[in-house]
Length: 380
Image 1 (cartoon, rainbow, N blue to C red):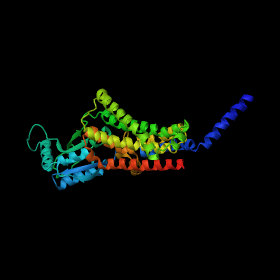
Image 2: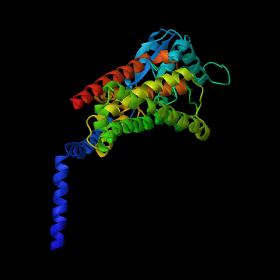
Image 3: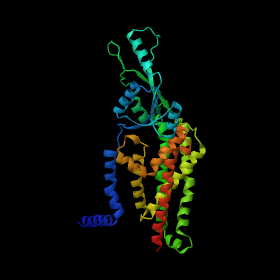
Image 4: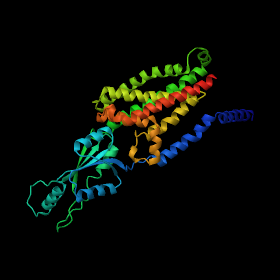
């Protein structure tokens, strides 16, 4: 009986302590809620509304019908028109669109010749010309390219011949950057974002908390060091650590999974530097709120979950609802996943990624200012 009383006292004490720890109590409620919302609402493997472009060299009623037919599938949303295949390819490299429907100038003639040959009304060549148009696809994401590949056969309405129904024509599928559709090619660059998010935020989130728990904070407060200098001093060592981690992942990915490494080194270093800085400032911001290293770890997990699920690392960004996409744009990992894949897989230059880089810079500046201001309040 005495043992049960002692056990009850310990359990009661733990519940009371947990109730006073507001951050831990909030994590108990928020983490399941966030995961439920993410997996039940935001995560969707049924890819729809992929950003697409058009190169229509035919400019005929039939080509416009084809474009409308493709748009009605809701798999693609045509956002831009391009004058040539070269311009469309450059747009795919920059990430403006994920696929382009290329309609050649002789689109109607190709379809008519194919119909004549299939019905035997014209001798033609022994090999039937199946490809009447082309889909240019960013193959670096196998899930996205698989969804677009489903449009390889679309019904085309032109003046039909008096004949039995013919099969729909074939569209040529040109998968850029990952013609073999290997998942590892897409995963390895995104894995850099996940690992850097986890380690950079956790390291810096624990930095100031560790100083406080070890009793070093009082010493730092009495020194002439300024809050800005303290924040910078906590960030700079981990920037080098982040670059080391990035190098390890890329080299092992190339060695084990044959991930191509044809990229501009300067662009890779710049986008990674901006993301590391953004992640470190977020970790510093967490460290000004957390009271213990356990709380710092809990808050890091709270940031890590949406970073993994909403950034496009695991699930296509285009498949997410609009509200989830807006939330994802707030996360630094979203911009880095897009940037690192563009640089490593598509050979993009940092000048092609101005929007994502500006977002990372803005996040770093705002986060650093907020962390510094909150640390000043602690000095008071």
